[in-house]
View 1 (cartoon, one colour):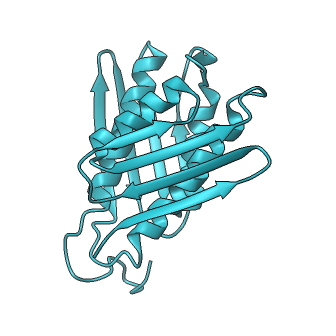
View 2 (view 1 turned 45 degrees about the vertical axis):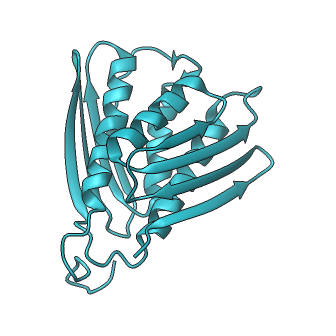
View 3 (view 1 turned 90 degrees about the horizontal axis):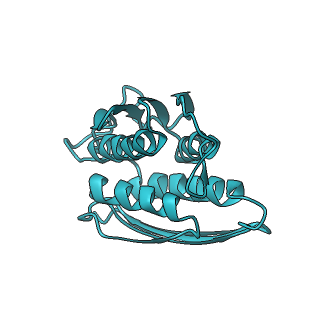
Length: 192
């Protein structure tokens, strides 16, 4: 079963195309126009072992909000579509990732229901050109359109380290949750 999907999203604010292969080997080609966000998505692909291509053009002259939000929305949709009926997936997983003084913790359930709980105590308003408030918004957008439960928490002194550990933990948890471990749909309902 091929678990690869390409999708596009075009609005008056952004134009985005994403290709995701859940069973890749961490290859990536990402350009959102926001260098630090690109770096985080590169890390997400590499540490999650997802092949990921993202091309995004957004109204960055306004700010980074619409681009970050719409990448999150489309990435969640692509994840959901690439999973198909979710037959055999592990479904739930978590990851702890340290980066120097920082620690990130992420737990996911690919439940078909969206819910997000975040504890992201960033100190600065931006890292590079990425607004730190949009990190949480990216996660909420991803979880909502991907129909997943996502809990994320980080701690530390350096916002760069916290955000990078967070993206790595997210990718590790999603990699584990998307692995095929058995033959049936992992739900007492029989569907997800």
